Length: 309
Image 1: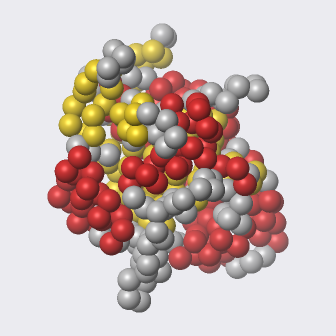
Image 2: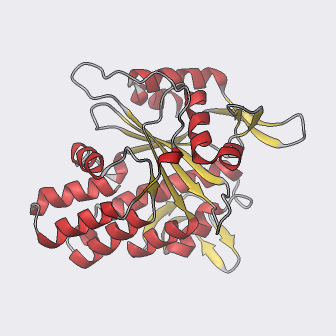
């Protein structure tokens, strides 16, 4: 998100004054942590196809971290960017998905973060999808609220009406501030499709953030722009390889991408089940998962999306 916004601004006004300093400050405020990527055996890197760069895979995590507790990966998503940098895919992985956890037995996928932090969560995804993850970005609940508020709220098309205490989320277009957005994306029990509906809301809010960041109202308001990008930068933790230069290079290559261009979906599932120890779990569709693995490795995600969505 930050890279795309910076690229748009630099393309529009040149590397000058206030905007340039805001961009650099934002990138300098990003926390970079070497321990959030796995260090053991990893899948073979994907080779670029002719006249393209290699596709990229980002792990996006939302953690309920509080104080000194590690917490859980309450939100787990894969952001896949095609080799030509024109196609973006945002895939949710339900936290109750029953998968093999490296070094452990089969378990719900959010257990990986609880047991081994971000590195084990990333390793679990790599094992599941048979493709290396290039980068990881983590935000906690407080950071999520801060980013939404810095943007002045976001607008989403709510697919299903719901309530949470005194808050009403009517069906249709609604505008949310930070705290409202957090409650909105954490609801599940009063949604008709539970965790699946919650994951859809999470993806919709991410797209809304991208659209707001790249809107004229933010890009042409120097104060709003600085507040938005510096808040965004300071509330994320990423891997060490996602340097300032890497962000700028990727942002420039994706400068024509907007929130509406993001293809949003959920990892293929085959329903619900019960584990041997009595847990309610989400079962993955093994045949469709094999197709997904092939698409990720061959840079053909658009075909997979159109045939499985």
